[in-house]
Amino acid sequence: MDEDDDDFGELERGMPADGGCLLTTGRLILRPPRAEDADALAGIANNRKIAEQTRRMPYPYRMEDARRWIDTLSRSGERSFLITTRHDSALVGACGFGVGDTGELEIGYWIGEPFWGRGYATESARAVIDYAFANTNATCLNSRCRVVNEASRRVLVKCGFQLVGTGMSMGRSYGGPVPVDEFVLERSVWESLKEWGAA
Picture 1 (cartoon, rainbow, N blue to C red):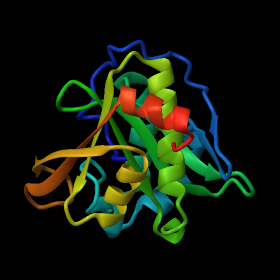
Picture 2: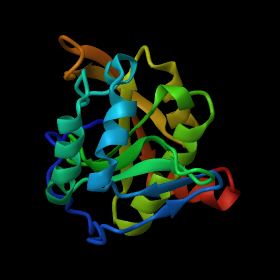
Picture 3: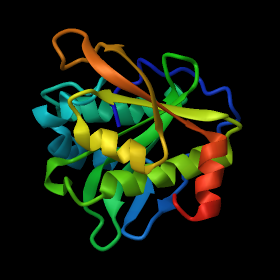
Picture 4: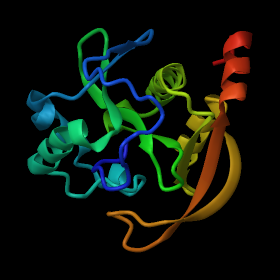
């Protein structure tokens, strides 16, 4: 998930207030970040390769960045989860959603480099998508990724998102605006995929 809370305001779509929600998948547990997670979070997030693919993560990513992000979540209106493995509670990354630049809900995620290529991004994104649609009245979810980020594009497509356009985005680690692909997942598409057992 992109870090920092600059792009998210208060959610206006019936966001549940419960900060203790846990989401579970076959291999993962997604849970709210806690103050004691800051050290592990800074350790796995301090990676230029991750920062360059997100809009809001700084690089270097220091302990104070992790603490600030955890501290501001309760005030930002964003719903974010740390992704951990079920078998050993290893911190894998983060995934969440909040109100994006368009005023619609936007989902974001990131996975630590040691865990790339295992399908964790898709697995966690599907859990957060289900949570978002089940707990808000949003008619769609939006997402975007850099045009050079093939892995993120594959995640979005696997989750049922459709490419709707391209644009430019500023990022803390980009050094200037970069082209991004813009995606949307309509609630009706999500419902159909769930009914067919495809999501």
